[in-house]
Image 1: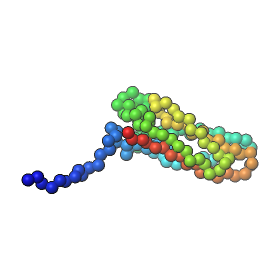
Image 2: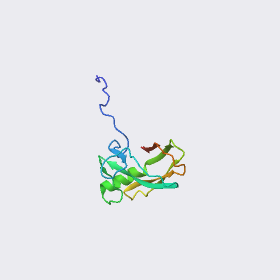
Image 3: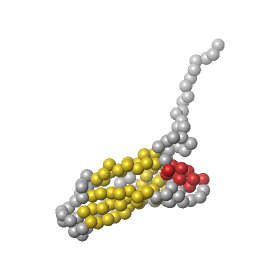
Image 4: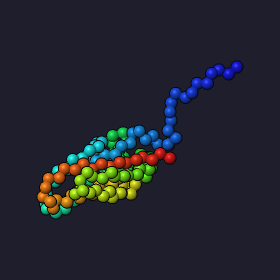
Length: 134
């Protein structure tokens, strides 16, 4: 007779690249999930550009490097979609400018702050990256 069936003990992703080690960072040197900006009012609109980076196992995943790791980085970068849920102050806007997958940066986040009111502004902006598995 045939013995009892025992199911597999391991859950595998069908994705050819394991995705658990990937992350998004404000720094290319280490994984940083938050960024604090302190800007001085000019009475006009202040613009600040902040790049984001793809990280793998805590290190920069650089799509500009033409080796096996760089190829994986390009593959993962093209599977990422970005959505912003915006800022909690109407005086603060963020525009994401994507880079090609062959760059070491993912996006430039262009932050614009309207300081014409000359009042202190404290705003939190939230972003979401989604890594789409095939």
